Length: 81
Image (cartoon, rainbow, N blue to C red; front, side, top):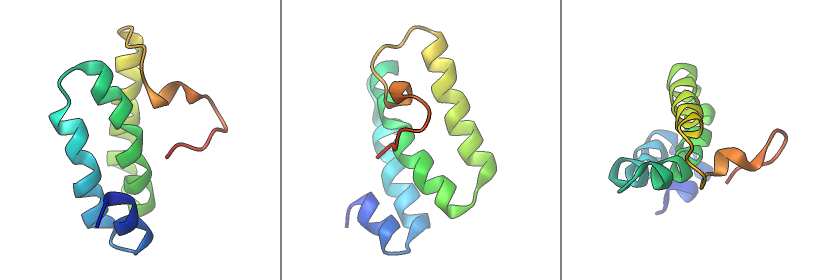
């Protein structure tokens, strides 16, 4: 199963593990920043506020360094995948 299917199926811990894998393997900061919001959603559903905050903070830090390609830039009120 893919990460989002695991999340939707109630296997949130497994979803977080699967969804964090692309960010961990990202070859550069832009790719990592594009991958971070996906596990953030699963972490939020899992109820791990500390890890959610950590992921969102890293996304913000990457934006501050000038990373252009990111889903974090979709703006407030937008639904992230």
